[in-house]
Amino acid sequence: KKISKFEINLKSKIKRKKMAQILDGLKISNEIKQEIKAEVDKIKASGKRIPHLSAILVGNNGASKAYVNSKVKDCAEVGFESSLYKFPSTASEAELLEKIEELNNDPNVDGFIVQLPLPKQMDQEKIIMAINPRKDVDGFHPENFGRMALEMDTFLPATPFGILTLLERYNIETKGKHCVIIGRSRIVGRPMSILMGRKDFPGNSTVTLTHSYTPHIEEFTKNADIVITALGDPHFLKGEMIKDGAVVIDVGITRVEDNTEKGYHLAGDVDFDSCAEKASWITPVPGGVGPMTRAMLMKNTLLAYKHTIYKD
Ligand code: BQF
Image (tube, rainbow, N blue to C red; front, side):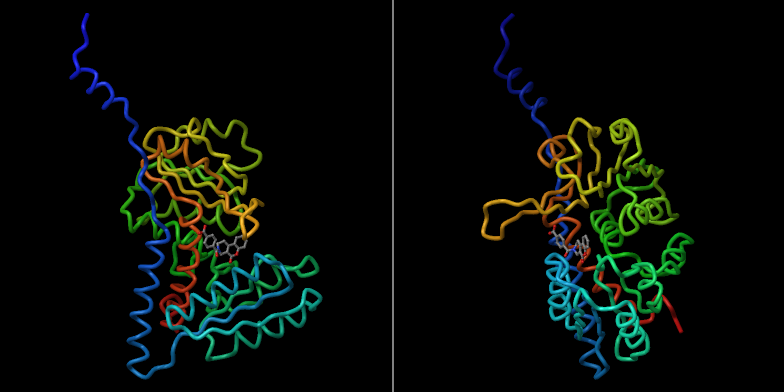
């Protein structure tokens, strides 16, 4: 039987893969920073004190230095005041606790962060517990984690807050969806598992939290409407592990050494090319969740300034 040109055209049209749309974190993060800047401009015009974020950096970790510097730059961009306190890696826990107490009591500082990870001799938990929850713009204090889990107003950790904001701005349906999260870190996976199950938008998902002891992870990811990867294993999630039309959020940012001037590039947990062929929406790396993380720290600082979370 002869096949007409029309039929061939039709077949190739049906076969042609529909590529995923990009969740553009860089674009949305710039919009959010612009919105914050507009608010700060109004605050300035009214003659009031401007929002102030402080940061504590301990030691010489290259990535930590770069992160903290980028936060100082973001503050300048949105019009916040910022201050950076640097300690050598040999600093004692007591010295650090003293600075935290000073910032806790400084009425000119709205919020502050201690850049993680800390050197090994420091008890990270003890340091975080010393931060006044009202100034904990990273949302790492257990009181704020508890408030989050109980669906009270609080500072959400910047990365989960950034993911929620991306889903919200792109109006991605989460209600009644199956959300599979890979990784149970304190900063991403575990809070995300709580947030996606909240009675809110984004939220109202059925959540599965998978991790290094989950056998046959693909049996979960294949059944997920939304997959969030935060494990730090470049190209871990392959297209064959997801279902058609899935929403794929990549939180991985592993530094992979290469021959570029920089000496490295960032690799996500998602095998972008194979997943983009099947997904409906996908975040790129770089330019996806990372820039959102940075913008949400600015947002939390503004919320601290305005006493949006703790009202007294
Ligand atoms: C991008 C962080 C692990 C440990 C401590 C943009 C960032 C990253 C990636 C960024 C992170 C990760 C930050 C991209 C802040 C996110 O375009 O892909 C921005 O600056 N982040 C941090 O301060 O501490 C970390 C990850």
